[in-house]
Image (cartoon, rainbow, N blue to C red; front, top):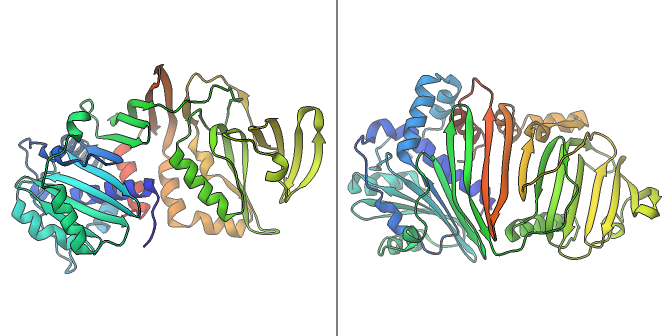
Length: 438
């Protein structure tokens, strides 16, 4: 079965909901506020939970679609209208003016994603919703709550999946009491837990042409107290905390190219784009400056053993390597910390950051490619690159940061500001649709 990244899985679920909403809201919309009884069935062992506020989302979507007169979005959504195998639209009995809950379950080899809805008609839900699902999807329902359960990874049969869904709705859980919904006017909120790390009350809201983020982060894992050099320039990201799950994913990628590194403890990175080379093999080499602290010692000579040393400064533990004709300066600050900088394409200014983690600067650098024109041309014409660029090119400013409040608790806040004539929700929907995430 095709494996999806966790981010891709989450976005796929959200995108599926959005597409269904656009089609059915007019057909089944109830303007009388619905009860949010679905929150009573959020699994206690869920690793990730998204709450989408149907009332706020419907208000913003109607404004975006009707007032903005975005013909591009209307055409895209029309092409993505979900239908049955016979090509017909059918109502699904869901109250889209109440909360929609999406959750993730990781149970060893079986990974599940679920959607909990409030229902206005159980019979309509049971009759029509299964027609939009494949073999890896099943439903269950009570009188007023519907569940769609999707198998992301695993070998459960459809019948086993159906029984699992029914069991989930057979008994209320305590999740909602332990984790109440966040502040009002947030279109989407997130709760996430892994080990001793918990993200709570993270909400996404819209104000004019801005996407605003606000929430709390709590972890018993110590953040690094070592100070890494930080600079302003390009697309900047730094973090004194690094999740184990992300370390695992990075290791998987590095192992495929024969690189072994200890777990990352913290980093500070400025990215300025990539150049594509074809000799001796096809590779993308970043224009970047980064400092990385690992949990265990790492040796520069071992990391760059396959490349030529073109200069060496033993007094400063500094060496310059030729990596496929791109020169990189590498400094071993101490046994666990190294700094890497390309000798071209980088423009930096010293900058002091008070945040524990931050993403800022221009994301347009993520799209900057030069080098081999043939490979570059192939990349920029892929649907994935086009979908990313269509969204990134509309971003005027980006800043999301995490700052310490007390002890092991941190505050998350930030914004993505789009160009003045753009509607944030429209651009986000177009990105999801063009990415073919559903």
